[in-house]
Length: 240
Ligand code: SF4
Image 1 (spheres, rainbow, N blue to C red):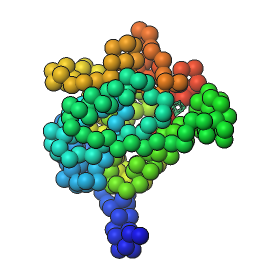
Image 2: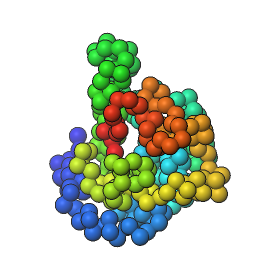
Image 3: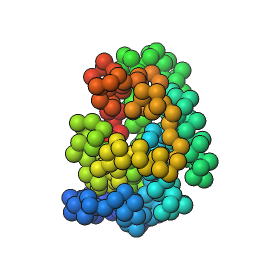
Image 4: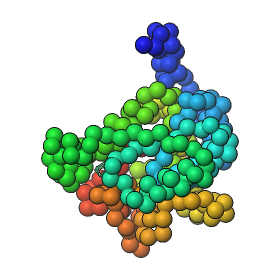
């Protein structure tokens, strides 16, 4: 068991009192993504944990983080219903950047069906996300002080006000969004100019990629996240 003093210091480091979030966010706002990630390493060291969805912004975060710190730590949530292209992108990125992704999964799908009914993603997608994403995410973040997300303000209205640094009350730790101010053009310029592997579904009409059951391609004129939980009135999985 962890010593009491160590537990207490961990709690202090994960406390919302540790930083003035607004002040830090204002300081980070003019910095580029590498500057924000460097600041994160200086403050949190090994306790900075990078989330990967294996979408285009994950490819960029991997590139920037490993350039700054080859020992950067990455994790992903394996819902067991990711696209084959997503798993293949994971493997290509692991090879290109020499990283090992820490995997967090959930209960087996057949157990979920037995406990909560078949096709929970249709009957109650919030419950399905809670089981297959939020609970593994809690486990992933339970031992670190700050996590890093690839969300951008341009992704959706719900993300339009995302700061580069904030207290994440849902999971009880700090959160960095180094790409918050990146445009779609910034993303593709970076990927193409550095020849970085990315999820091929982006070239097949999927601007945003989640689980196979809940992601469809979008049509011209639709917004980037319109292909997620299409027709269900749901816009986020409960993580960001
Ligand atoms: S995105 Fe769909 S399949 Fe994936 S966890 Fe959420 S509801 Fe379930």
